[in-house]
Length: 116
Image (cartoon, rainbow, N blue to C red; front, side, top):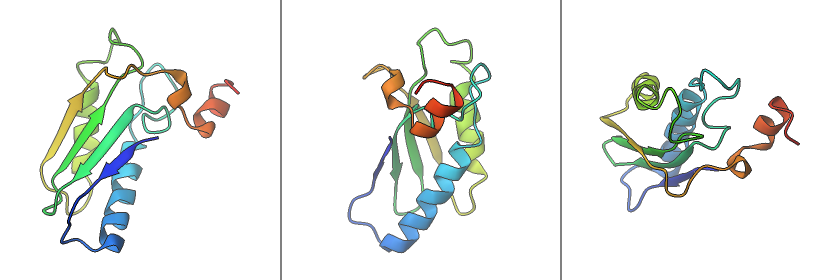
């Protein structure tokens, strides 16, 4: 699904794991208005990078470049992540490389969308 990046951290592995779980939980509160599955389970989150000061950069995509919420989705993700206790600056970067495909969806998303 998504990749978490962190190199030579002053955060302990346990702290990083706990913080990352909170980030994922926040991402799971964001839904594409046209699809009843959260963006994390849809496989729209490509990478979560956490800095030592807990600044976070998220690389994400959309199901299609012409998605009606393309302009709003990064702000929705940023606002959800800002609610995580202790988070620093939040940067959300959109990419369409590689393009999203249904294979990126979790099993949970496939079941919810009857795509199994």
